[in-house]
Image (cartoon, rainbow, N blue to C red; front, side, top):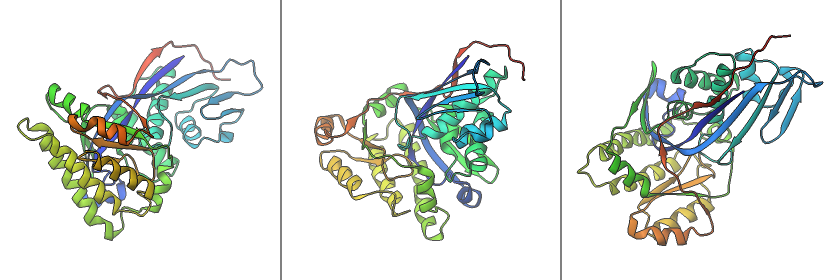
Amino acid sequence: MIITKTPFRMSFFGGGTDIEDYFKENGGAVLATTFDKYCYVNVRHLPRFFDYSTELSYSVTERVTNTDDIQHPAIRNAMKMLDMHEIRLTYEADLPARSGLGTSSSFAVGMLNAFYALKGKYADKKKLADEAIYLERVLCDEAGGWQDQIEASFGGFNRINFGPDGYEVMPVIISPERKQQLNNNLLLFFTGFTRFSSSLHNLNRVSAPEKRKQLQEMQSLVEEAEKVLRNSSSDLDEFGRLLDQTWNLKKQTGASISTNNIDALYDCGKKAGALGGKLLGAGGGGFLLFYVQPEYKDAVMDAMKELLYIPFKFENSGTRVIYYSPESYSPR
């Protein structure tokens, strides 16, 4: 039996510039972190007592005898890609799917990590990220960027640069005290709305020429925000103001990015004292993040009292195997 634990990600700046059609031509950069909310994938070989050979449990339960009959596209394609047979897979998570935190990519990374471990093989973080990108973007033909798979695999607070030759992961080096201060100034709320990010990416084609200007400005904010974090003499509150700036740019890249309800919630948070914030993910719903100075926290919490507040801490580990008990397996 194998159990993997894979974090979800929180993207601050540069989202949209991590889409291959865009960064192959224009370059791209993202500033993001993983945090202490996880998905867990439990995999073992299914004992041969049943009239089915594979059992999958996620939001539904599937029992099949032929891999081609699996309804979940990521599981079906991953099993084919790694030649997996006769398995029992269980998925559970700390937060709901389709909520803007890269949940599907965290699952893809954690599943591949578990599959390799079940086969008695080690896969490094880059291999897991690359194969999760290939699984979701090529085999499953789902629209979207690359940052989710990379962050879920590598973990930590990173700047990820994208270009014609691929990507590089550069950890953001800041003092523990400054990092903790940033963590303390961020408030996360669940709006209750969920959506498929791939559908939103299809609606909001980021490669459209009229959106390139906004994406280039959003990319430039990655550099500015990183400088604020690295320079201990800089006012950390500027990070919050930059979040407000990038959210306003993000909304210009597609009509489905925000909604009247989301706009009203965001305005309410700012009126209560938040310096800035953004909706996490492709847009349309999910989690709303605010940067709030300590003296305004109570006011913002009160303004958002109808929403579910999610306390969190940054994490640095990325995907990992937390239980490893190898088992003998001979193919039929």
